[in-house]
Length: 362
Length: 141
Image (tube, rainbow over all chains, first blue to last red; front, side, top):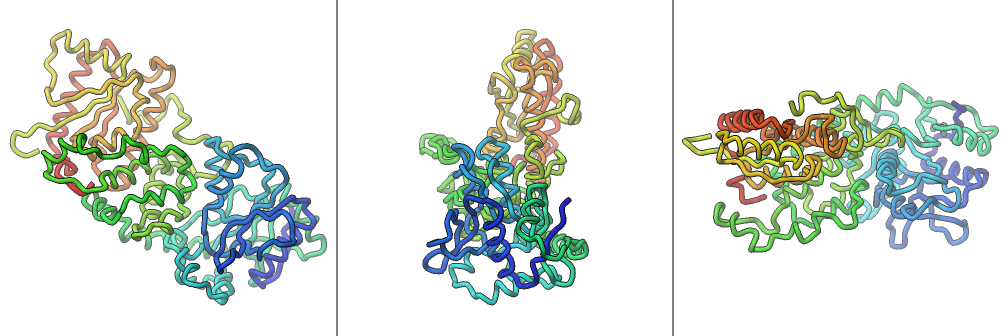
């Protein structure tokens, strides 16, 4: 592995400068990162020239959209034309890798810069007005100081180190940050951009401390509402659901443009409900909210990267991401699968071994 | 199940093996449970997870998926995918603490009519030992 470069202590300024240098020396046609939008918002932006570009905010601690979802839309028709530096969080990268496995996107020409992730804040914080001081405080997370107010999915995230990124921004010793290489391409980019910067490596102690905190966080967030005990709890949790399907719109894995849950066969005509009405004496409208969520688990739980976007957009505050995280982890553990670990690894439901799972079906 | 209430069971049977096995059971005049409804699919792999969830939330006490033995699939490898999918469905139900025993997978060939009878009877006996599916009375689904 090539050496990493020390980029200093002043985050996020140091990160912005590092991105600037990578852009100048790396031969990129553009960069895809978070940027300030008019009106004080934040969203992803593909910037191809410096003039007129908005203020770029690489790895700003919110996730207005899942970058994997956006990249899928941008590369569905074919690879990106020129080399693009994509700056995303690990779960966004993993989500994109999962969608590439489904042949819905293309990794060619994309160079990924990711981070040993400290999580992000809920979207509602941005709309309530962003306090600049919060960003400064946020970047102290490798110290082990708990960041207050992160999204629940991030508090309990144990997959905070990117698997397939070319460049990784990581905590280094003594409060410094390092830009480290995750691939040969990343190593070359660092050598070109930082020929004289002092060498620095990822600090294993910081990573360990983060892992301990996250494991505790995971136990905590999964122990409340997401601890579903059967149908009655499920009905309670999803009882608030208004059937807007925003969770599936925000999901990086849900890609079908003709979603089965939005087709006419899921609409409950009175004709079809006749039997239900006779037996139960009443039905909820809209019908099928529980079926929607369980059905969606059946579609994407194997690939759920627990990014938390579904919960972020839920207008009625259902802990969707925690439930999906719990179910996703169970399914993935059974198949010994980590979504987004390697683009060459087959999806568990698209492959098989003839002599496996003997207990299932005799 | 309370009293003399019978569990309701839905079966997804593959056209080439399990359905033919069920047919043979009928022709051979084997006694079969009457509270069992069959949906014929061209391959057991046609049974998508959504069918199973819909059946369970619709109030079925049990769902049986039956297809050709591994290696015997009419479409070479459909039943291998079915097996993985059923593993996934059971894991989802387990993670939500729902009764995963209500979903079962069996391999029944076209000639195994007595096996078909045995599988069905055993499944229904097991279901009799469980409560009736709560989804049958739940209006907020």
